[in-house]
Image (cartoon, rainbow, N blue to C red):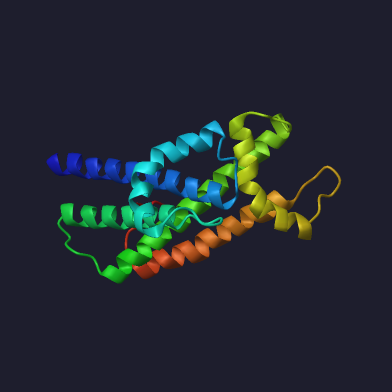
Length: 197
């Protein structure tokens, strides 16, 4: 009974860390896509993640350009340290460092792909239900997915009222997730449940 409670507690902690990692990668992607910084949802994400990101901004410096290295580093270190702590708590001992580092990269990639996956679903639903929505959340989703949609639209223009680019992006997300993230997890030799799948 005690071990079941302990493992449930570990899974809860791991889930909470994955949610926080999701928010960190959302902050990274919002910066990369140059989404509206003053959007109330952007501000909320920044406030929630700033305590951890602030630790890394001291030596990585403030955001320069589109890519926020401090946020990326914060997510990577948080995930690697959390996996290490879980290994120690369950009594497995120290996992191989290269495997742990690869698993950290896989976790970041997985979080980024999940954000795009859910944002694409929201964008598709909004395009049917409220194509001209001005809600802060709707605007943020559109700004988030536009950088990955624009290059695809150049290659596959809309056919009348039908835009096929979201289907292509969905397929690409699934391919990258299956091939790249899957390969990283296998190379790491660490359970996909710990990485965040």
